Length: 283
Image (cartoon, rainbow, N blue to C red; front, side):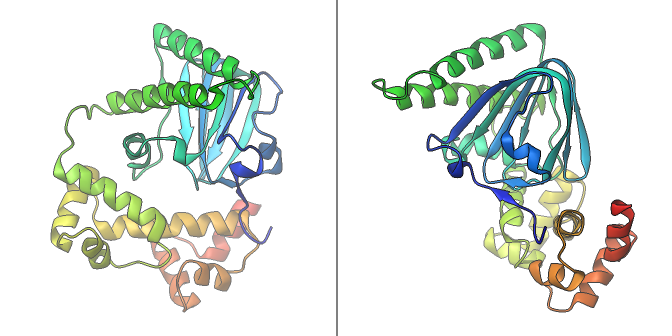
């Protein structure tokens, strides 16, 4: 594998949505059988009974009954086990979510956590997803098929976004610093390969570097430079583990002309050299 595969939802469907009810031993997504990969779309999971495991960016996420979860576009993941799980799986094009919903899902600087639903909440989700699935599986040539499909999907993604917002106790108007932290996270994800300077991010956000640092420390406890290097090293670890690119090629992919400088940075922030990391996790 020369690089981490990026799976495109449009290669599998023109509707911008795939949906299944998974059962023990079943395939939630045919691409899962191909190993670790990224998607250009969102994934949503609701485990109704049994258990399952998913590896996301080097963190093992375990699912128990009543757990709700999502995977962001670009996150490297692969299925570990779903041999005893029943539940729902949706792959959703980013364009089918509202900007407000995406803001809730994409604001995190650290990996998102599953939400455990109460029994009555789980029943409401099941009923909503069942209605969505019935329409999704019906004749696509029916009048207003897509309008109804996307309305039902919006109901689901809206409820999930609200559930995550409530779980984080961030209801109501976001503070200026919280909004700034969210905007920084969005910029960081899309620009980290070309932009490494805190002052450059501050300029893009039309604030001073000092204020951006203050906002990030307030919201996350860590400064801008920390989160830039976290994103760099995470992407480097992905490429070291899941691709066959050498260190020099990975350094170039991440915007470093000097691969020895990149290796020093990686060691400084992870405690090991890039090659040592690759050997350790490929043993």
